[in-house]
Image: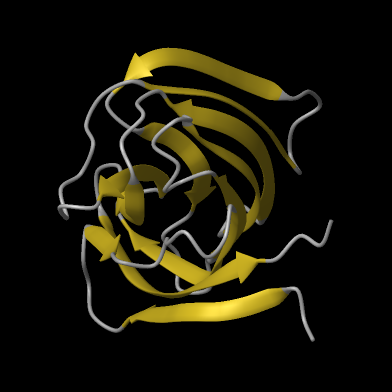
Amino acid sequence: MSNLRLINETEITSTINTLNITDVFTDDFDIYVIEGIDIAMTNGGGDYLFGRVINSSGSQITSNYDYASGYISSSGTSMAAENLTNRTEWESLTYIGDGTNDIGNITMYIFNPTNSSSYTFYLLQASSFRTPSTINYMFKSIGVQKSTTSVTGIQFSAKTGDMDSGKFRTYGLRVDS
């Protein structure tokens, strides 16, 4: 038996700014894996992917987000870092260009989302591609949403533009003890 169980697959089939994936986190798992595949953006020059959690009432939680993100591009010589606290969302999950062939992919781990005695944490790695300058980006980030509210979903959004396509798969991760 696999330790990963597919819970949800959501595909972007038309241009949207915000994608809500609701009712995917339950008490069945303490850890979830979200794969974002072939995410494409529309905005002059590219855009950042942001994230928020959704509570059991279906509302976004809009405060108490802390995160640290680091990235390097194939055209750079050093890693850039961003560390911010008390934000309204997790920012800079990845950066995706807006060219015809520009796409991004993420793998995000969500920890303790429904545990109302713990904060919700994430760990993420991402890669993306940008043309015409042919730049690859590699992201690593961690973060926390500092409330003890039960979280049952997640929201992804483009910072200033839109997402044109992409597929998001949510898995429950069983950890054998």
